[in-house]
Image (cartoon, rainbow, N blue to C red; front, side):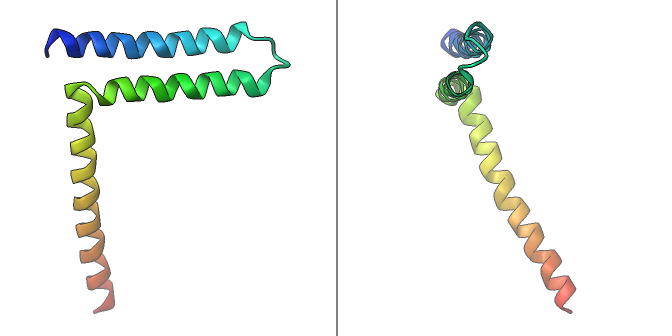
Length: 82
């Protein structure tokens, strides 16, 4: 793995940690803001991971898995119709 990808993954982890810390530092009566902060930190971290090579490989793997699952579901439905 290249150094750039490692830095991206570390940055994603730091963003997640910052989101969790921010969640707990905000007062409990600010529930919507706390949840929004956490969701935004997850979205940013996911975006950073997606821009890395391992993230792109994972997305490709997930797409191929969905295609394969659809093939298998189609086969099982054909067997049930017989």
